[in-house]
Image 1 (cartoon, one colour):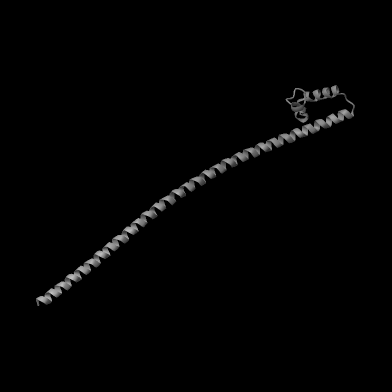
Image 2: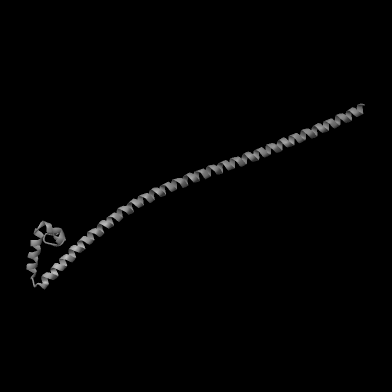
Length: 145
């Protein structure tokens, strides 16, 4: 029996070693897998943070671009208003100039001398209601232009 007991004991020892080796091997493999997963998770976390930063930068860029576009739109509106004002003023002055040229042509056709024309314009410009109509500030005596 001693031999049988030794054989059984040897087989049990071998079985225990094999089982322990298998468990240790499985444990090591699981630890390696867990480490790989942890490393991958850390890499994904870092990538996620980088993407969040890029997204925040993109949002900030969009906000800045939107603010700039609004500012440019306001400037454009102001300039359009300025252009409208200038066009209106130009049209008004063009009407005054056309009226003045028509009066000058009438005066010439009537045979008036230059001094008579100047006296007539002075007389017309002396009346406040005629100043805008005849453009006395722009074209007449004492005018700026």
